[in-house]
Length: 410
Image 1: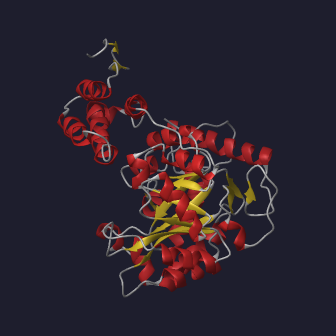
Image 2: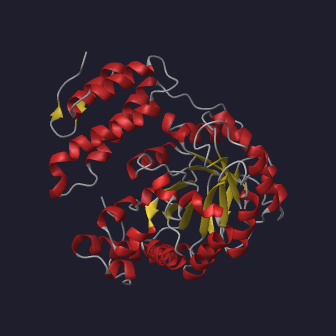
């Protein structure tokens, strides 16, 4: 799986660091990016407009409309205010594409990518930043704490053709936070703002920030930091209503999200505790211009489409058991096409099985006999066994893309 595009692209520092096939696809992607932006241009004007109606007058109050809005982050227009939140190890390009195909998804954000790894040109790091044209508009999220390296990484992201570069200031995982990255940046607001300032000066694409309410209950400084990064050049801010100390326990504080949305002039997206489409639409009433959904979309990949239905005044679409089963089959098929190289050929099937096991932790919640499906998936030792489990649970034929049709499983 590589980047789609055309030839004769300008060679950015990112491309120069590559070789062989990877360099070729990067060159093609750069060309596609140049052609696309030349053809479409960047529209200037209002940051939001009402779908199917007149453009609203400028002002923050327009965000509070119950109608679905088209967002703008910098010069990037999003057809929906609902987005897939980045989740390490989960929201890979295969998963993102499947969610995007269902509709209602205005933006996808990659799994977080190490700025250090990008600058050093580490192949494994570059894989986390891969995307397809189908996913646009695409935001590549990076993490790190050194302004110079973050600026260089932002240039690499821009050279890869991303629409937006996002900075992770919300990851509470110690192995990230201990390196002056992730949520630990919130403990040093001035330094965090200097990172954004360096990046904003280095690239033309929008620079955005994802943060939490704060480091802990004693340091709930998201409102102050959000204003500082806005002043430093951030084009949008996403706020998860929990602190780093909470991780994913307790409840998200949407009051602090609303406070930030009210004080900034750039778009603010909220995140946290949105596992039903009705909750997503309800959260828009907090004054945010968009909602990032993480665990909710892992449980229900149709949740953004259903939220869009509700926001447009339509009944939310039904999702049949057959559709849920076919989603897993499609996910397997897309994963089988990814990260295939000689060094990992022997372990590729196992990697796919493990990816399905990880998704099943969320995907099986809230459905009848979900625990039985989760247990069966975790017990499957091969792709064929995994397909049989899925087929049996959802009453579907088990098809092997690698061996042809093996027949219906009763």
